[in-house]
Amino acid sequence: MRWRTTSTTAASSGPPPAGAVVAVDGGRIQTRVPHPGKGPGVHEHGWKEDKVACLYTLDGAEPGTDPPRVFTDRNRVDELARAIHAQRGTNPDWPALPAEAGSAPLPEAAPEADARPRVRPPARGERSCVVSMQDRDRFGKVVAAEAYARNFYGSGRRAFLGDGPRYNWAIRDKWFADFEPVADFVHVLSHLYAAATALSADAEERWWLYVGWMTSCWQSKGGEVVTAIRTRAEDRGWSPPGAEVSEGDWRVVVERTLTYVSNNAGHMEYPRYRRLGLPVTRAAVESLIKEINYRVKGTEKFWNESGAESVLQVRAAVLSEDERLAKHLDARPGSVVRRTSTQAA
Image (cartoon, rainbow, N blue to C red; front, side, top):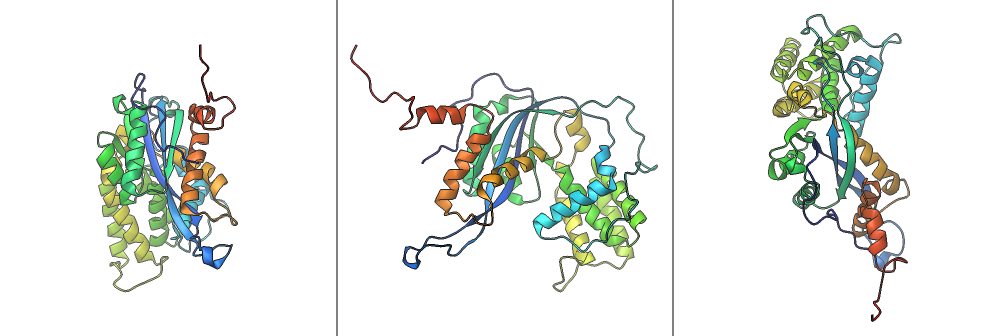
């Protein structure tokens, strides 16, 4: 079955939404290469990336200037950081948290909290999904077509959420250049937590290192964080490793964090994003990837690439919160409700 990867709407229609968000990420799917001469079974299997975009509307306003309390909960931060690094395959050998670890107040040195009452974060509206195993250029074009069909380019508040991989920001630069570029803050804090753990053996000290750096990044002071991390690393005798070392080596962890924060400094203006009522995490697309994985990922699932592409398009239609799947089912050849012939009047 063939499925269009673009929206069912050929041109932009309807009023522009109050806010528009495009969030991109990548999942993984197991593929195989068919070999007719080798008989049935799985041959030349391996992991390949499926690219995913979540496009949704939003409303709402920004909270205060302090980071959300979830980012100062030790157990939650430790869980988030470990999960992200494990997903990348770069999880260092971190010591376990003390049994009494819990949430902590912001450091006294941080600027005073905004006195305005907190309001709910931006609320997500209707979602549409684009997913494909195509290359970056083709994928970006399809995502842009979907955004155009939903009149996202006419919105007064536009955001593009990405992460470290260069192709994410290449899609933004080519197709969404006037969207605010937002680095996923959860990935930022995971790098800071890893660096703090690498630079201090004392559980209490490394926690406060993390909280201070995280708060500074939240307040768009990434340059100060880079300087602070570099200074502390140099005090310990740090220099970029010249020979190949393990992923858990503290110098590798520090260097990776410095590179990440430096490269994404222009995508970390969180106070401004929050004033505009824009999201600062890719929770929506991360959740979407899990929903896609329920269908395509499993220990016994190995896909031919053409078959994977087809099922991904159907899955994206199922998960899109519009009528595209119903319209397709009604209009497809063989549909019980599709008119196949006309009668003379």
